[in-house]
Picture 1 (cartoon, rainbow, N blue to C red):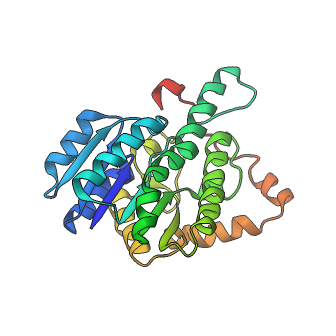
Picture 2 (cartoon, rainbow, N blue to C red):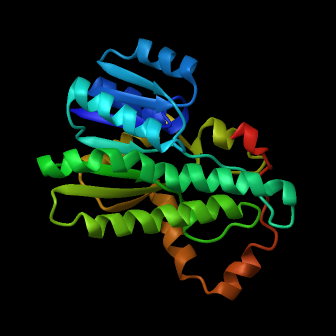
Amino acid sequence: MRVFITGASSGIGAALARHYATQGAQLGLLGRNQQRLDALASELACDCAVYATDVRDGQSLQHAAQDFIQRFGVPDIVIANAGVSSGTLTEQAQHLATFRAIMEINVLGMVHTFQPFLKAMKHRAQGQLVGIASVAGLRGIPGASAYSASKAAAISYLESLRGELAGTGIGVTTICPGYIRTPMTDINPYKMPFLMEAGVAARKMARIIANGQRYAILPWQMAVLGRLMKLLPAAVWDWAMKKAPYKPYLDCDWL
């Protein structure tokens, strides 16, 4: 099995890498932190290639994809996991750069991840593209407008891509996790219901991917809550969100 994972230097991405390493996979690990990637690669008992780059850099993703294919062959699974989050408020001019960074990483980064592999995967008529979205993409969350918008865009993008690739042998899986314990959620000052450890989430995600599911929310409690969120009328949602806690703001340089 050959698996390419972005956002692999920490959190869900690193947990997925550890899981697939136990399955004897050949891994492509892409992230921005060279030191963390090297440390992860050194602990894994499998063949892996490390790519320290930013998913906003489409050309670098092209080079990484070409190198991975030359080393190991066309991947069976490509997981676009790289993502960032921050509290954002439209009225704050200094938040505009953070808005841009979140949208570019969470949405365009996913496009940059998949595009270089598609020709080879189509030629082989086999493979699976996996996008890690979020329950936050189901409805707009006050104080996290950029993150909610980016994940909503990711969900729609993946749905569009699934239609485009119908009949090619390439599957597209959308995974919307709730709260997972990662550096991204560690800064949240509020209670996070149904919080999952990254390793547990990775195993559940791998099962979803292996089953070829098109769309999944995890954990199951969040899946139930997610369905309810979608059903609520706008007026009820607006009322419920009046006192919702806000995620802390992070300068774009920290994302």
